[in-house]
Length: 90
Image (cartoon, rainbow, N blue to C red; front, side):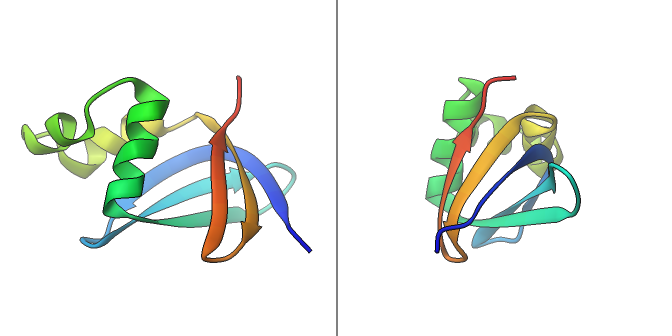
């Protein structure tokens, strides 16, 4: 059974080798999606039309990246460690 949840991004957290995307699940609860660094960079660039490495590297860091994603809506489909994350239209 494939599960699907939707919600609004609350923050993105850099843990060195992985990034965690925290989101408020519609209805109730918090969701977490774990990304390897490179797939997260691709997700960020698709979501913001910005260059991840430039935004992260030029002294802006994790908080800057997180603020660019905060409030965007996503849908998460699949089982843990095999999830597909899509942006939703506002």
